[in-house]
Image (tube, rainbow, N blue to C red; front, side, top):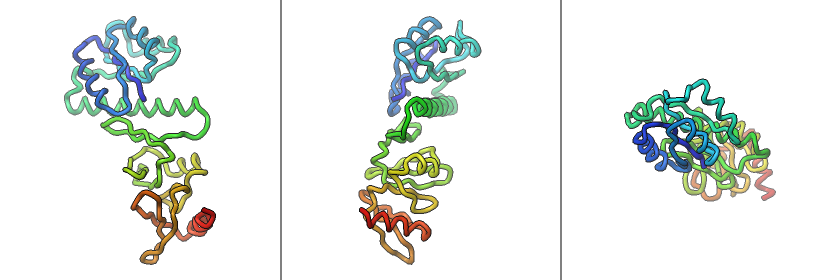
Amino acid sequence: MIKVLIVDNELLAGVRIERLLTAMQNIIFVGQATNRRSTMAMVEAQAPDIVLMKTPMPEMGTVSFPKVFNQAALTPILVFCPSLDQFECGLHRDNLIGALLSASKEVHNKRRQLYAGARSCLYAYSYQGIDVIPIEDVRLLKADQKYVRAYTANTDFTINESLKGLEQEFPNLFIRIHRNALVSKEAIQGIRRSGGRSLAILDDIDIQPEISRRLEPKLRKLTAQL
């Protein structure tokens, strides 16, 4: 979960943004502060991951105020939004959501640096919020232009990751079968031929990704051991 604190001296603007945040998956609204003192008190009490702050704000300069956060036990990511009271306008709303999702990615990256070892989940970011995907649920990872599609038994997600990075991070869970695809070792059911191509049969999903000739011997060796 990503905890978000709003800093805005206009209460109505905060109410509007609260509605937006509570409608987004895995994002929690923890409160609204209206001045410097209440902001610091709520940062200490709620330990938000992100502080969404309207600018300009009385007593809070965009240069000096972030330094005050360093006094807190946990330093949140600060996102300046010059027009929180206008966010219902399409462009402002899109910019606000985009900034919030970018900050959420930064939060997850900070958490990865704090905890050693491979992740247990992947994250998909969209205007609906954040989808949390347990890594053991993923059957197939397939490159899709600049992104990767992660397929589970029930659905699929677009994640902002590289296939190479995922292969290096999870060598015990996935095996490469093509330059554009990794499959879960536990999901492999077998190999079949179709139209001169070799396809991987995977548990729980109908997609049968193509296997490159170069990588097929390695996959056949693995399936023989299953």
